[in-house]
Amino acid sequence: MAPISVNIKHSGKTYPVQLDTSLPPAVFKEAVYNATGIPVDRMKVMVKGGMLKDDSNWAKIGPKAGQTFMVIGTAGELPKAPEKPIVFLEDMGDEDLAAALERPVGLLNLGNTCYMNSTVQALRAIPELQVALGVPSPNAPSSSSAPDLNGTLPRPLRDLYASLSRTSDAVNPAQFLNVLRQVNPQFAERDRSGKGAMMGMGGGYAQQDAEECYSQVLNSVRDVEVPDSLIHPGVNGNAGGHRKKFIEQYMMGEIRRELSSPEAPDEPPTVSIEKIMKIECNINAQTNYMHSGIMSALTSVISKTSPTLGREAQYTQSSRITRLPSYLNVHMVRFAWKADVQKKAKIMRKVKFPTTYDAVDLTSPELREKLLPASRRLQEIEKERAERRKVRKRTKNVQAAATAGSSSTVVPQDSNAAPGEDVTMANADPRTVAGGALEDEEIYRAREKKELEALVHPDLRADVGASTTGLYELVAIITHKGAAADSGHYMAFVKKSVFHSPPPVLFTGPTADDAGTTNPGSEPTGAATADLNAMDADDTNGAPTSSAAATDKGKQPGVDPYAYEDDEDWYKFDDDKVSVFPKEKLSTLDGGGEDSSAYVLLYKSKEM
Image 1 (cartoon, rainbow, N blue to C red):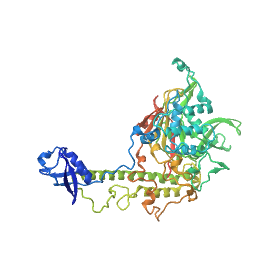
Image 2: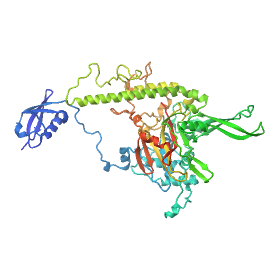
Image 3: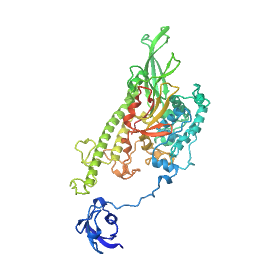
Image 4: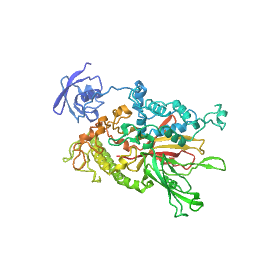
């Protein structure tokens, strides 16, 4: 039977619709939806005998050409064509597929190379290192300009990171491994245990220590310079006429060691300053927490000849950090030499490590005084942010429930609430709620940033790559599984937010997307003349005069730019296998047996 033309009436408007009685009523409802925008599940079509149902019989209803049907329901937004054409996964190239899946890829194990794979993956938690190396963004052409790199290892490392970001399959790190063995021959040592020969492998390469590999890789890229794009306008990027080095600025601290003897009180203490790339956590029978192990390592007793006493005396060495870098490496000293078996054995004691670490207690009195104002205020701000997230989440749930309820009943709105206004929560923090509703999050962040910048000590602000707060968050872990140092298995764990959070701000040079990052807030070269503490537009209270000034910088409508802060899960890198590791299981890496135990921890400084 040919379709007939009928009319539908909704909200005082009449729409012509084609009705084919040979098709079920659901097809007619779809036509009504296309005309009015009323979703099918919220639609009521009044026909002869009541309401049109999906199993209604058109023969009993008897519709006629030109007949008008009444439609009841709340119209939603009409469907729009997608802004970009839909592309299926099987039609995507490797680069597009890697970006769509948003999951990092692993590295192939080339024979006892898990120590190297875990090192490479853990260092991916340092996005500034990739900027310094000149790693191009996944969407940038392969011919993009890259900085000239000194040394043998930086270029293969850059190429390896570029490969990891442009594919959805595990990457073969053979080129990087060959160069690593040339630069550090210790990693080319052959397996002397005989296991490889028994398996018909002819004696492969030996297992190595991941912490040693981690340290050697960082030492091999020490000549990489800090690029202009990472240096804040107004800060000097040179030191003694030479360009500042990335590893020295971002990953190395300074420590002051004072050596004195209670047996020779008249002997002046010996004070020395040295640069360190890691702090050690000593593990003994009394060590239960990482912080206590670090404090134990900072104070030690040694024996040496006293020049005033003319004999051997006991000396106490007290150490305090005088400079904290942006990235803090913590080495859990889990391997100790056992003379009875003539080999390094693993210390399997369970030692708890924090995901947030306050390193102010490790510093000298002078540095502590500089860090405390910004450090304490940042802790308060983080509590306020957490409270705002709770309020916004509850508001979203209330609005979702109200929207769902409107499908069957009309939900009256508060006459005092403006359209789109947040629902006021009774127990919300009054410091974060103004006028009965939360402001846009960008306004809070801009106000907090200006407040914190005013609290940062000028010496710390001028020190490129230094921590300005002394507060750190854990971003990467290298673990060891097994009972001996020359065997077992290494894996890396990297926080998911590392891969999904905004990249570092670039202050000069090309746009952020061309420099291996997609940060929309990066400034062009012309911004180098801006004042160090300049804000876009401020009122007397330090808040932007308009939310547009804060939201125009790359913020997409309907997308929460801070959603990554709620994601506390991790990625587990087991060579070529990558999986999600829930935050609830992180405590299983404390140790206590032969299973995976935290060995190297990488902390990132919390900044503005």
